[in-house]
Amino acid sequence: MEAIRHFFYDYFILLGLSEIVAKYLNMISLFIILAIFLFIADRLARRIIIGFFNRISERTKTNFDDLLVNHRAPRRIAHLVPLVLTIKLFPLVFHDFPQFEGYILILIKIYGIILTIWIIRSILNTFESYFKTLPRLKDKPIDSYIQVVMLFIWIIAIASILAILINLSFLKFFTTLGAASAILLLIFKDTILGFVASIQVAINDSVRIGDWITMEKYGADGSVIEINLSTVQVQNFDMTITNIPTYALISDSYKNWRGMQSSGGRRIKRSIILKAKSIKYLTDDDIKKLKGIELISSYLESRQKDISNFNTEKSIDKSVLINGRNMTNVGVFRKYMQTYIENHSAVNKDMTIMVRQLEPTPHGLPLEIYCFSSDKRWENYEYIMADIFDHALAAVTYFDLEVFEYPTKFMDVN
Image (tube, rainbow, N blue to C red):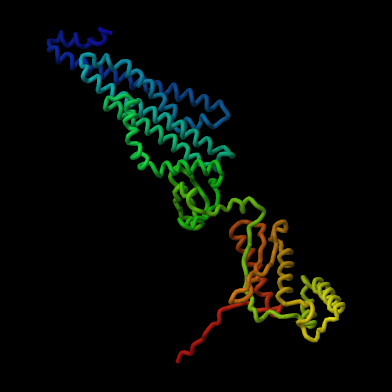
């Protein structure tokens, strides 16, 4: 070792140079040789380690090792070889200058910490990409978990670097850092809230990537494309992107349409308002006329017979129409729409089908149609709903009913 340390020193002394100059030139010469040696070692280590990983990835069926190579993990692992050689050999170079050795050692330690972070990050990115290829984890917020791990690693790394720079033990440094924990909590408040929200979202399975959610507070109405530690990205139906704070998923209300998408249909729930003054009892002539409508002809026949038998048994005076039992045009229209929807090809027959009256309003009587379309795609759903109400609005007049409209006032312009 002594011979290596002063290999060039003796040569420079023989040339007649002073001792101090010979020492500096010896250090520079050894440093250049060490740099060349480390460069060659780094190239060889990369070639051997990367080649080894490439051969493994070609022979295995899993794509994990392929992703490991794509994220440059083997390349960064190879950098450990020159780092170890540097730690072993640099004391030889700076033997005569111990004041430099301390600074160099600090730089090597800092580089070692940063290199470790690079390696861990490559491995974590590999796990992230691999988990996203698994069907059962594809819609989970993997990004959030990776970011949390990286956050803690960076905190430890930065603390370690600071401890090295101020020449303080790692444990003592963290003990001192505990006094500033309140400030750190304030700085990382959103990150901590996002981390807690990510865990709750994953455990409760409340939101997945690909879910359609609506959050009026943030103007979001579309599909979730990413869930990470700080934000949830939603691609709206107008192709814009809305960023929602992750913790808002547990602090604010939102609507998740996953239940509808996984069910057998999408709900149609809409009303038409009938004028109250157009509602009336049906006379025999009215019933005879309505029997021409095929969907309710058998219903009218059966219903008219039951009512007639009841009125006869009770000796009801039918000279006044209100006496006894009667049919109304709104009741028959309600039955017609119920039958029409039950026969509609685009309505799911296994789910609720209902035509009902709502509470009367100053505008009239709301008649609500409640059913589920078999096709849940937005454009088709809108078409099916429009088709049902096109028919309902056109059919109203056949029952001598009127739909409420605000009166239009015409003003003569002279």
